[in-house]
Image (cartoon, rainbow, N blue to C red; front, side, top):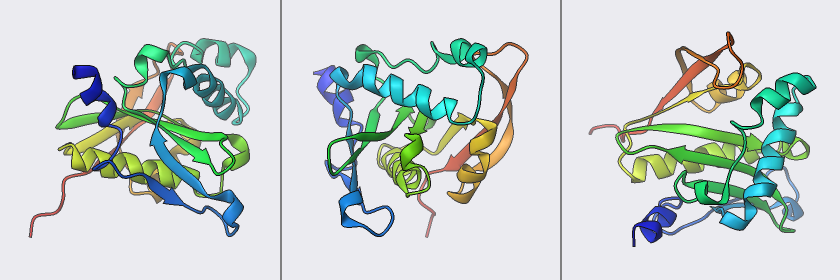
Length: 183
């Protein structure tokens, strides 16, 4: 029963978010709950997305464990995917922890899908899900290359945190408030 409840947490009221990034209907993307059998493909997507920023092999090796999604993690981490109309997985995000304070643990977009609205679609879904589940705030350690994106979707820089992968490296700490404004 607990596993079923966990799996249901990835969606808002059982609805999926749909968008057409860009102008072409062939590019329609929907957000849905990830499946445990997709964990390896999602790990590959996260690593490709991270490598897009030009990090060297040693850096990527240091990040590999932190970017690995295991089948047993998928439901617990409230993992969602952005799926293209042709079935390709073009993004992923996780909403972690119990309310009222959550964490955007992973958020990655396939490099070929960057700049087409997939990141915004995922971020909006995570924010809406967090609000529906009673989260007041969601925080995350941001890759420095992603800070402009996160600021554009409403994230605020609230500090710095140590990297979970690279000793001595600090990352920007970002936050959104998800609670609905009081009337």
